[in-house]
Each structure stands twice: as C-alpha cells, then as structure tokens.
Length: 257
Image (tube, rainbow, N blue to C red; front, side):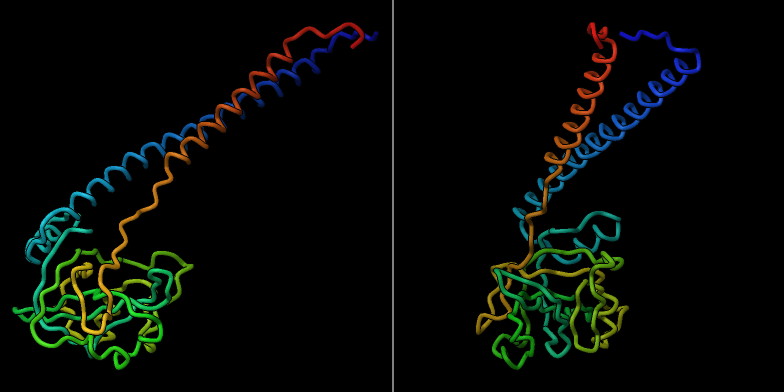
C-alpha cells in the first residue's frame, strides 16, 4: 500500500478545485431556485389573469364609451364585454389567417361605422379558406344598422415574433393584428378609427352561417406550476449529488485503497 503525504502545492490545488466546485454548485443552485421562484410568481400572475377573464366574461356588455374611458386611463380592456351598434362596410373587410375547430381559414375583420361617424373594426368570426372571397358568402353581408355584443381586444403594438410572417397587404392576408396597416389598406381615416378591436361573441349569427362568431380564445396556457416543479426538482437533485460527493470525499479510505 502506497501512502504518500500530499505536498503543499498539491493540497493547495485540491483546495482550490474544491472551492471552485462549491462555488459553481452554489451558483447553479441559485439560478435553478431563482427560475423556480420566477415560475411561481408567473403562476400567481396567470391565475389572477384567468380569474379576471372569467369575471369579465360573466359581466354584462357595456357601451363602447366605457371601454374607451378605461383604455384612455391606461386600464386593461382585454376581454371586457362590450356592445356596439352601427353599419358594416363589407367592401373594406380585412382577413386574418386563422384556424378554428380544426379548419384553416380567416377571421373577418369588418369596419363598423358608428352613429357618431367613427369606425371600429369588428372580428365578425371565422370563414373557411375557400370562403375568403365575400362573394362565396354574400348572404352574411348583413346590411343596415346592426348591434354586436362581444369582447374588447387590445391592439398589438408590434409584430409578436420574427417567426410570424409579414402581413400581405396586397392579398389582404394578415398574420398579426396590425390595426394601423388594416386601416391604411382599407383606405380609412385613421383619426376616426377606434384604437382597439371587438370580437363578436357566439350570440351573433349571420345568414348562411358565415362568418361564424364566438372565435375568441380564452384558454390561456398555464404550465407555470410544472415549470416551477421542474426547476425546484433540478435544484434538489443537484444539492443531493453535491452532498453525496462531499460525504464520499470525507469518508476514510478503506484498507488496500
């Protein structure tokens, strides 16, 4: 059996490696715990948001002016129930590429001219891909004064992701809701357009069945608990491995080793 006392440089190197490893483990633990805590915070935020949406969905529709007042004060208008009345300008409808109930097609955003001369874009609902041309669903182009109940939807300030295609204004196909581009492409006076959208709810039915209302999606993904458990679990596993390694390092060597 060869037992040799470590020299001072060797012992110093060992201590240095031990300290560096310990610092790396502590840094990794701090990152993992921070990520887990962040996901818990996101979980609480998402649960609060879902509760707010549920409350708003259950509320009675309010006048457009009330939604505008909330927006003007900096409040959140998303998913608030609203009722609007006016006449649709079907010749200027814009088409937002979408899937609904397993079918590919478009949400039809049609400008509604209000009694005061202003305009609000209403998402009247879904049409299948082959019905993009309004002539294929002419019965649904309802004339005259109409009242629509639905949900206020905030505008997007910018393209949500570089993965989203650019809007094709020539073909009238929108991949993200750029209200400024919609207004410009439709040839509308921007100063008269309400700066948010209205999604028609399922109570709105159109002759011929198209567009089909009630397309607003409320099922927001909420996987933050699973993510938190994952990050905390990784932190626990790392701590267990580090403690096990430390215990093995401190155990006396068996004879013959």
